[in-house]
Image 1 (cartoon, helix red, strand yellow):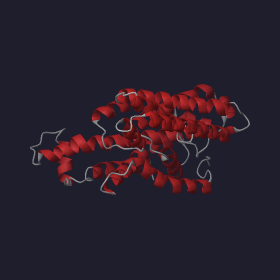
Image 2 (image 1 turned 90 degrees about the vertical axis):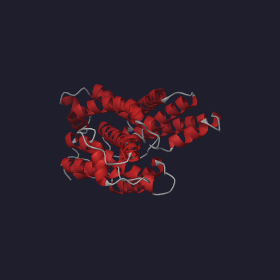
Image 3 (image 1 turned 90 degrees about the horizontal axis):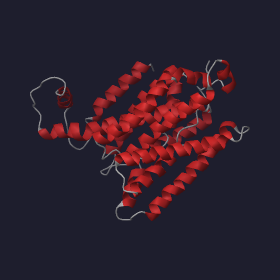
Image 4 (image 1 turned 120 degrees about the vertical axis):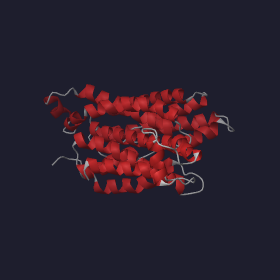
Amino acid sequence: MRPLGVAAVLAAVFLASFLVGRYPVAPHTVVAILAAKLVPLTPFWPSQAETVVWAIRLPRILAAMAVGAALSASGAAFQGVFRNPMVSPDLLGVAAGAGFGAALGILSGMGGGGVQFCAFGGGLVAVAATYGIGAGDRSGGVLTLVLAGIIVGTVASAGIAFTKYVADPHNTLPAITFWLMGSLASVSLRDLGVAALPMAAGLLPLLGLRWRLNLLTFGDEEARALGVDVIRLRAIVIVAATLMTASAVALAGIIGLVGLIVPHLVRLLVGPDYRVLLPTSTVLGAAFLLVVDDLARVLTAGEVPLGILTSLVGAPVFLILLRNGAKGWTRS
């Protein structure tokens, strides 16, 4: 599938998502409501329909796209930095660290901006600890790094459990519990605006440096021979990917395996060239999580948390990846 084809899929899913929900809105009405903000149109739709489209569904759709794009792009970046398609922000402890930081923010009574700041700090500390532990054993390579990420993630998960233990069981504990399961039910345009800035700040450097990620896949020595400052490049990519992951966690909670599944599927579709793989992962990740969020809204009478659905989808895909190894990883 060509990148333009992936963009067309995203556009189709974007428009179809406005039709999903308990309040029915006709397709031509959705198009008219959206177009009315750009060109003058005489309203023929009820005010309730405009409220549903603009105040409820549009923020949620944009948030799902932003979170999916951020998680997929950060997952692809981590895989390039560590030269392994099985690496993801989940495995390196970033998501758990960001979740612990955000849980501390909720426990302290902070608002959206404060929770996001705590999430980013927790994610940055987690990935720094993972990389520090993994770099200390030069013989272990990526395996040591992944094991270090599992340990750091376990410690962060213990921290989350502790915050839940000491939280007020009537107010704070339910807020932390439901937030950690992942949901976009209560997201607003203001929340999205707060998260979009750090997501964009992380994504833009990655897109600008994506051709250098190709050099990292050859190994550190080869990259240095081609004039790449490996340490500096790796630090920039890690900080940028961590920023996106932490912002996504702060906005939507912990949504697992997106950063692992989507980049690997994109690698099978378009190949390992990061000049194409990274932007395609960003677009397909947005479409993927938007479809999952649509399913979350319609599968049951009560909304299914996103983290549950992505885990149910991601677990069998992860098993397939284990069986196939690094197919599509090396350049031919």
